[in-house]
Length: 67
Length: 264
Image (cartoon, rainbow over all chains, first blue to last red; front, side, top):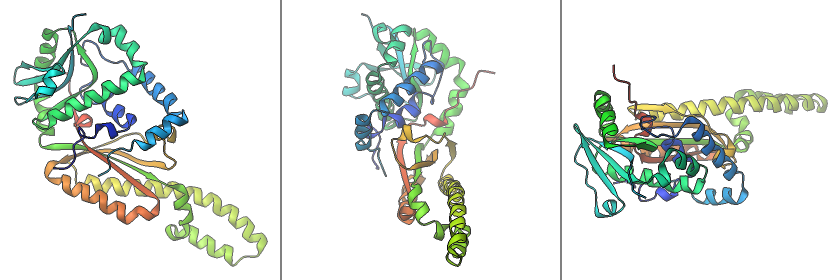
């Protein structure tokens, strides 16, 4: 069996992860859910984080799984 | 504080196996109709509407919880077909979760049918402008023809033609990006049951120097996954020198291929 994401989920970039879990799957069906405005805020946070050189280097070294 | 909010990870349609590790993390399943909903009881301290919103501004909190979210769902994929929920879906009572399941019963059945025996794979392709522009005379007939003209021209005319060529290269790179993106998309689409195209992300998000030319997700039948991976490898070998970089990740839970419709 090929590698599953769980074994190496640490290797996924935060962006790749958020791209899926924030806006896809079964959305907007709970009693409490993240609003679109909140999602935008999370992305803004990611953008600010990425603009720091140090973080950029860290993320670059945390390469996503490559088959 | 009492943990009385219900955090939902996913729904499965066969009896899930929760190992000791998962149980010790507080994971359990609730049975509604023909479905098993994988949940964890969480505290208002973290997940009440107000506190949850506050926590979303803490990227470290978001990252660790988002990773946990995907980890739990991925583990469930080992034993079951899963319908993943998006991160941070909270129900305030079992009754309200039960109502969701029965309200959307038909749609859930339909979705399970659609994703059964399939995996989600993500393909992102990046292209290095510099590598392309260095090879532009080999990749573009127009550029090659113009280069020939430059070589045969007087210095003055050659100077003007070189300016023209700079503009041409820009357009040709855009055209080549589109062509490559389409070519790869078609190739992977042939091996997939469904596809989903995502926005091309700017460099400030990817943290890469090269340009993203394809951001797509594919729903691949499990018996085609080996072909899918070997196609990634073949493309990588074939096109490695042309400045294209292929990044394939998976198997992901089928986040991109779930569509829960309102009850008719």
